[in-house]
Length: 446
Image (cartoon, rainbow, N blue to C red; front, side, top):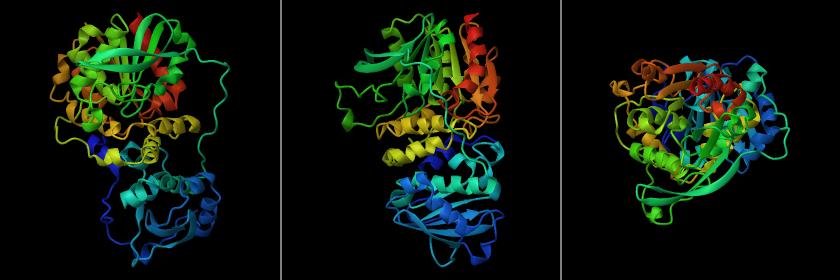
C-alpha cells in the first residue's frame, strides 16, 4: 500500500487542527480491558522511564490513548503521569492517540498494509498542535513506545560497539560555488580515491547522514566519496549576497539540479556517480533525464515518480514546528530493527535544521518533482546507469505507484528492495544498506 506523499506530509504536520479533535468522544463502554496492559503498572513504568520524564517535563495535559476498543485518559501534571483511567466521555482531551491494537504493537513499518504515515504507521496523533503536539511530540511518542513494550515485551535494540580508530578519515572543507548567479559557501566532506561518488542528503538534513559510508575502508579504495551540504543546510550557510531573510526559501527542480551540477563542476569532478536518498532519491531520475551528460550513473535510494498533481507549497506549519518535533517525527520512520543509537542520531541531525528549510525542500519533493505520465521513459540507460534501492519499511515509495512505477518506465535500470530497510537506511542501518549497495557499485565499476 503506497502512502500518498501529501498524506505523509500531513502526518508530519499533525493530524488535527488546534481548534479541536476529530472523531466521536470516547464512551466509558470503550474502556475494555487490553490483555497485558494494567493502567496502574503502566503509570508507574512511565514515571520511572528516563526518556518520558525528560521529554514530558513541565507538561500539563489530558492524553487519550485509544488502544483498539479500549480508551484511557492519561492525566499528566508537571511531567508526571498522575492518573490513568478509563476515558471520561464528558472530558475532551488535549491530545488523542488512536489506532487498532495491531498498530500499537507492530514495529516500525512491519506491516505496510497498516502504514498511515503517522508515527511509524501504527497510530494517529491528533490534538492541539501548538500547545501540545509540537512541543511534546517526543513525550507522546514515548508513551506509544512504552505501550508497545508493555504489550509485546520487546525493548529497542541496544547500543553499538565503539569504533576501532581514533580519527575518521573523512576530511571537510569549504568551496565557493556559484549557483544561478549567486555565490554560496558550500561545505563538503570527502574520503577515498577513484571514481567520484557525490552523496545527496535528505530534505532538511545534511551530509552527516553519509558518515558511515565515508568511513567504509573497502569502498575508499575505489571511490572518492563526497558528501556535501546543500546551501542553507548543515554547515553551508545561507548566501551573503542576497537578503535571504526577506524571501521564502523554496527548492525547485531546476535549483536542486543546478546546485548539484555546480558543486560537481566546482570540485572538477569528471562524470561522477550521483547517489541520494528521499529528496535526493527523487533527484536521481531527474538528473538522469535532464542532465545525463553530467553523470556516469545515478543511484536513487527511496525514489518515486511524484504524483503529477502539482498544487500549493507545503504548509508553513512545517516551518513553525519545533526542532524537537521534527527530529521525533523523522525518528518515527526509521526502522525498529536498526540500532537504537543510529535511529536517535538520525532524528538528532534533523532537529538542527533551519526553521524554513525542511518546508522549502518539500516543495521539490511534494510539488515540483514530476516524472509521472511516462516522462521517465525518456531516460536512456545506454548513456547513464540508473539504479534504485528502496527500503521495505518506507511508506512513501512502497507499492506500484512508488519506485516500481519508475522502474517500469526505465528499461535497463536496476532495482532492489532492502529487506528491513527504512526511509533512512543508509544512516540508521549502514551494514544492511551496504549489502545492497556494494553490488550496485561493483556494477558501476565494471
